[in-house]
Image (cartoon, rainbow, N blue to C red; front, side, top):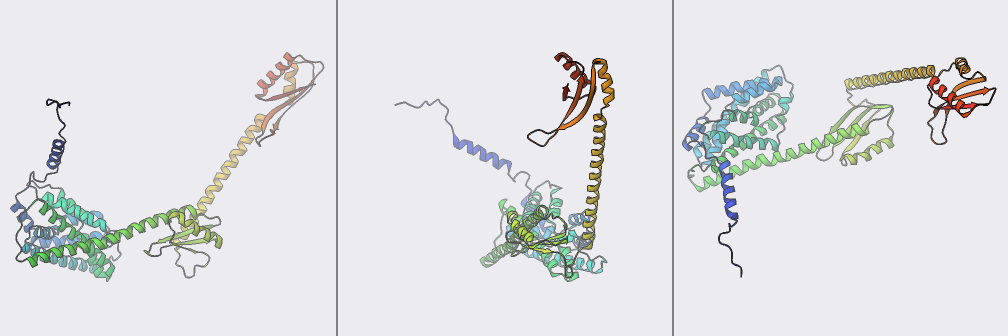
Length: 464
């Protein structure tokens, strides 16, 4: 039996994991520089109230954000989000739920309701008085909330409460959270919906505000519980159960519809990209032009509408297009081709003018290119002709100085076609008749002179 060496070092796997876990805990610990619990609660509690300075600041911020949405200015909207004090009561609600402080929850809900009412009233009055009534892109962006807005609000709320719980406040976090979560613009957009009677805009924008508010409160609640703040006792178990149920209902109201909307937006984006590829790759027709196409997404039956000018597209070509849609992931989409009669179809004349202009420009460019190619070909032909032209009389006189016994002489360039292929070759054909028979050396001398004199690589010399 072999005994183990007691002096041999043993591998202590548990110690490695212990040290690694300690390193992770130390690296991600939130205990360092954590402010006093009472000081944090006091700071958040002071920000809940909406009166005096906070209320006037909110009104001015609403006016600024409404103007920014009205004139489509991103910089102005960001400025309004930085001014807005809306984060106070929202974080107060999350803190109250986290420490079981029913009074703080009620204060937060009350002041948030006041802030929402003042915001909607102010923005509605502004848009009623404003001479600009067109919904710009910045405003429209706040009417279709998705699950990504919920993620942004949760992560922003987590960053905000963590920064707010530090002894030395991180100055750039709270403004960043205010910009990322965007509490102010949705309320202004909801006011625009009220002023114009557009319930869709109002519902979408207010739902976005609700998503941001609930998720920021939820993030505050999670961090407060994670940091282990001391919790109060609810007056009765029934109130505790009611608060817990309310939290779950609010979370479900936010998560479920926004997830569905996000899923539909992803489907819409994929459909529009596939439709664009299909039109660009498959709808290039001869003698006709696509002047407009619409990719209309619907959760049950999407469709692609093509508007053509020029010769009518045959039905078999349309059926061929429909068969090609499968390769682009458009199996369930409907293809509608509008051509010929546009009596009942709204046609964008600017699109037609632009399309015709593009066609004329492309035709002119093609004609110019063709003319340039023709000119270049003619120039090359002239150059080759001038090079290929042989002055037979001069060649004959020069040959006489080499071979005085020459009697007849002629030379011409000829095209020789090979037995296989269609690419011709150029050959210099030379015929000469002498009064005597020449030796092989004299023949080579004549060929060498001809190559040098005519700059021809291939020569066929016929001597009689």
